Image (cartoon, rainbow, N blue to C red; front, side, top):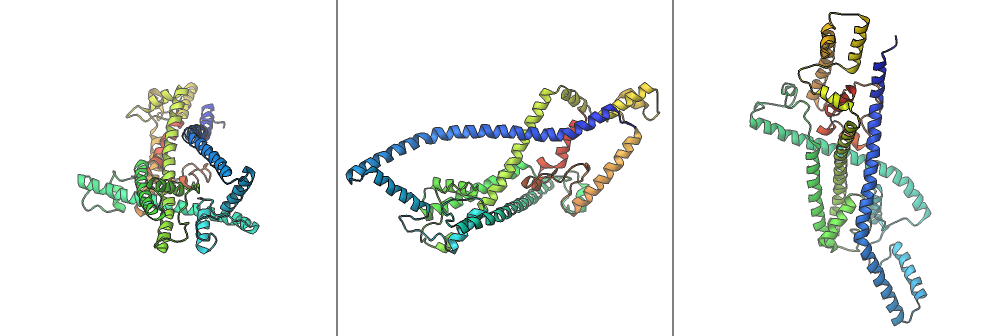
Length: 426
């Protein structure tokens, strides 16, 4: 038996809607990134280009005066400066520096490799070292990214636990929770806590505050030990914690420090915690950006498609159970054939009521899913209920997005399903 034409079109629209939405989000993000890069290049060019031209002019004047005073030809002076640049690239400085390839120096180097910071002040010079770096960095970077993702999962779970405890305390103070309330099976009887998740904006503010506090503390240490000014120390912290790693400022490079062992341990802890915190903050901010992209796409879709306004008006009716588009088309076909049924007669007349048989079947399925969710909630975090078996292994996201999936209020299944229902009924 061939399905109705309306059912085939609706199924095809359901199958293509998520793909089009993902492609639209990707293209919109690519356009925004291109505009962001162009704006950044314009600003930095306006800020730094005059300083670069002035520095080049001063350097040319210095070379000319040095060549004239000491009676050295400009070609000989430039050859000497090229030799100095080669020595600096090899790690040789005028002032005494720590050895680059002893065990502490090599440990510092591999730490910058696997964390993708890559300051560039130390690079392998031998062929064997370069080949080993390729193999070592392949597995080291992958393992470190996994570590960052697991840290993100733990910090999100910890913040969710603390924020939920504060929320329960607030409800208990307001009298909405009984004084003897405990987590566990009793949570199913409290409607205000079922499916509660922390907001991504609150998590972003907490992580941002922690990152700022950590950067300020680390900057105070670098200012006192390295002799940098505080702005340079803050700049170094951001460049390092975000794994940009320009290499113009590098910590722990002098030959000796006061309390050198304590400073190296503190430097390692600050860099490790800073990289993990900034990585988590970047991923949470990416969720906010994704929410903005979804909002923009929804606005564009509603402006381009007049049917969205009709469907939104139809969805805004209260106290009415509206069937899907396929169900209404099926009822019209039954009216044309003259096949009447006592269970569907009222539905044909009103256009808004579904049959008691379908309502009972739907309630049975919803009750089974609800019982499973409540049972899993009582034992810990609720697992995602997979209803659509056509989804592939990447439907829940990849990497950090998959870790934060269904852990925040803005990434929960209940909020994501609203937009899918909106598409299905359109």
